[in-house]
Length: 436
Image 1 (cartoon, rainbow, N blue to C red):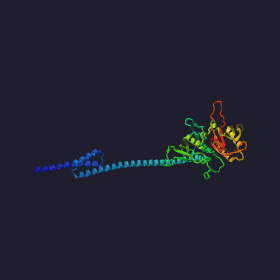
Image 2 (cartoon, rainbow, N blue to C red):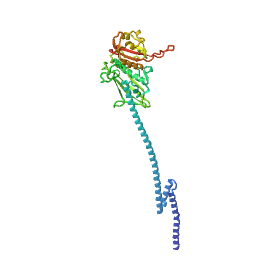
Image 3 (cartoon, helix red, strand yellow):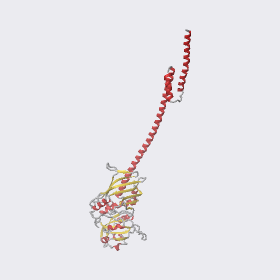
């Protein structure tokens, strides 16, 4: 009895003594976890496993375990939120960058569209200036850079400056607005010459135009494939555009010719920083235009226009004189056809002028003055005027002025003449271009 009771009592006391250290161990572990001990996740999981297996035998341990687990979950949630927030801020920053990039791209595209629209409008105005032969330099300056360069094939059917001729490509280069104006004048003058219609005349209006006065009575239209129709195509570069073009006469048959004349090809246009044309280059079939002009006058001979003194012999069958290209336009040569037309022999003509030889009471001086203004600018021109033969017989003449390219420098020891020549063709207005 007593011994057994003592044994049980001693055993109970020993058990309580053994349990107290165990509780302190659990409390120490839980306290260390609650205090934010920076041990790794593997240690925490180990502690959790240890608590699961050994230390959850009391209610206090279970409470402490749940508290530790909740805190770990909360810490993980905060970390996830923090990482999510960082990611959201990074995405937001990227979206802002993308928005700025998209806005800039849209702005650039809008500016490009506006600039291309300006290019197309400027190209149309440039063709209108050429086909209508606008003689106002200010109108040309609104479209072209002052140092604009025009490149095109050599055209034997109209007057052109060949001083900057590329022999390998048969293309000539013209520089500056005045050169472009001369080039535009040469086209309309060449077409008008087919029907003996002068750029300057006494007619108040062009017949059949409802009151309009067209240069040389020739109506020209143009068409550009600048993307306004569904089938038309225009190519763009960073500094310009390229498109096809067509320049067409509309009334040559009404003026007595056999057909209209069309020039078709492509044009490449380059613009400067302020969207003015600084280079324009034409490509077209020269022979096609030349053949059309020949057919329009029913001629078996090609329509040739002199560009230099050396090529002036090509028009030797027409009455013409060679003169100094400056006031008072002294005649330095005359061909036999001129003598036959006017009655003045070559020796009589040399040293004189057309005005002294041919003008009289019926001559319209205003027409002559306008014509001579073009000549002073060395711009291709023509006029219809009343003249008189040496014997006093009146006649109606078509006079065409051809500025000639200065002769090339001669070899050493043979100095070049300072006189720049020009050519005046004089023929009756009743004849065809090649019949004189």
